Image 1: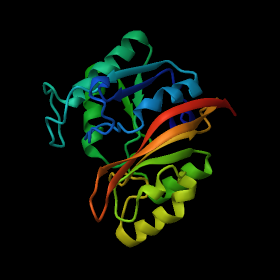
Image 2: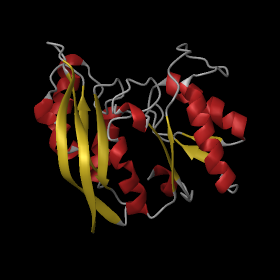
Image 3: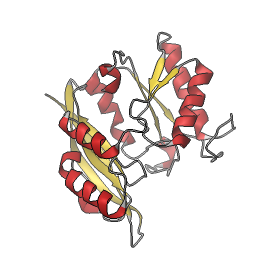
Length: 232
């Protein structure tokens, strides 16, 4: 949305996902969100854009903030994915990322962009998260929580929209200092509708999975099994 607001044309979507042969959804990746990967194709359908995807075969081999080319690091999966996109769409000049405060992620995306001659667009970088959360809700972003991993959040919050969760997230922010946009890994979300979508997504079937039974902050996620697209 911010890219369009600043005059950029979105020409393709790219997504890195868990390997199909592992049956895993949550990789605990340092770089990628993997929960919800099975339904990301529907976002491309709603936006009527080409969709490129690639399996994540690497891991976080290099965990320092800075990055240099490292064999079997998951950053190289991102490089291969964006390289493929650029080969099919040589007119592409930039990549948009939603990072807000993660220098680890930002540095890696910037490194990949530099190697491919692309510009990194990070319009949310260092935005006030309370303001940003409220802005997303007021601008019509309908996103649901599909993973929680923080004190005060639990399985009962899965499937709820950001609009429904805003009062609770702001309360937890004041009480425990959690990031209201989930930038600290407190939660992950999946967008069902927004102003960029020509159609919207409906979740037909999902399953709640407990990833970690921590007594203070259990990690639970929503495995999306089936979705369909409807007119707006």
